Image 1 (cartoon, helix red, strand yellow):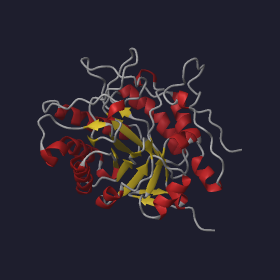
Image 2 (cartoon, rainbow, N blue to C red):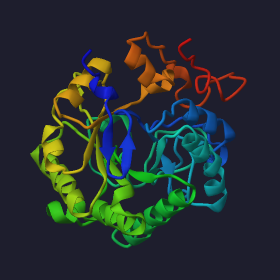
Image 3 (cartoon, rainbow, N blue to C red):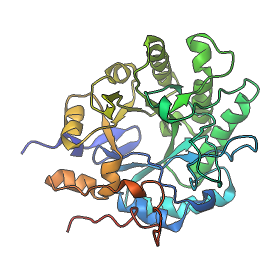
Image 4 (tube, one colour):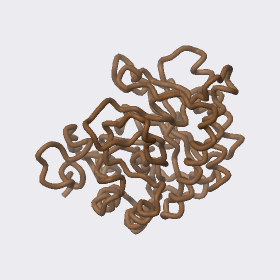
Length: 343
């Protein structure tokens, strides 16, 4: 029988992966008070396979400022405080006990415990958007005087993640501009994003660093900015570039529009957004991507690589429990660790 492309081994830098099915970062809102909980260890270890790659949910690098608006994304974990680092350790240990590789996704986002309001991301290592701008309030631009502190927050959080046992970090670079006020031209507009990447690479090594970016439907200037950043990642020794397929007719579809970025980046290229098994096999088989990250399918099918191997039916996901266990739920496991495995 012909090998299944998604289930073939792949060498990502120092990591010898046994297959190419990646757990995509997904916000789950079950880290009460910003501290990872014991149930996270079960959630991630359920989805761990020997030498498989997992990327954690978005993890904040700093607390919200007092003058910032709160966000509807409550109970998201952080990694800026010692308590959070200690809480992450047993989660990482549980994943490593299954033989998997675990990266922590880092972002800088507002935090709030009040009534839900539209998400308001403070800053993100980003210089593009993918058509979702109407769904999110735009992140504020970073004042030049604030930039060094934000860059340092990413650097310190990356070190904390490694101290917690993670194998590396992914910088969340989606959902808004990452621009220093007054910036003009590709170098200036991309300066902030690249300063964050460079600072983290110096701190923990580019061989333990990935960057996640949007592919988008904006004009040629934004495409040029994205290509500028992706090409610069090569100079900084970044391990992987993780990009999201654009929306086509309002839905994520595998459009092959990531090809220019794939060709510009010399390291491991991860594609995500709208993939099933057939689309993933084609992407890997054609060399369009090295790895494919799955979100909802992996959320609802903790044994997703095994189901792909057997061509087995997939569980349906329950959207009501994507962000928290949902109204009236008796336990955080609902819609989190209770999805069934194959018999």
